[in-house]
Length: 74
Image (tube, rainbow, N blue to C red; front, side, top):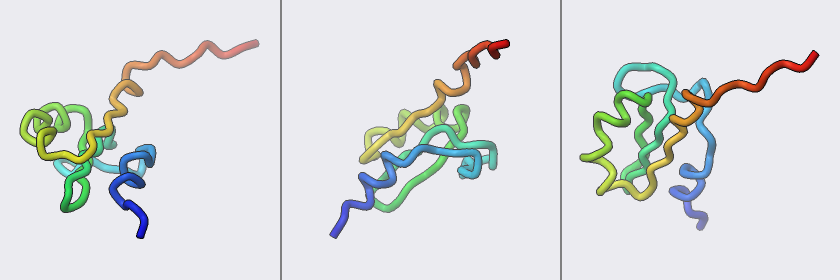
């Protein structure tokens, strides 16, 4: 039997993943024993203190929001 929790945690988030609170693009995945929750950066930070102690994994891709795209080459 494979470990579903490990599979969820390592799967990158994409534009189709939506925040469970507001529907915005999800950048945080909280994997719990009962399943997973997806959050935008705002709601992830709002609920982090409460959920992180219960989370099996906390996958945070909010750095994508501040990464500077590379300059196009001519």
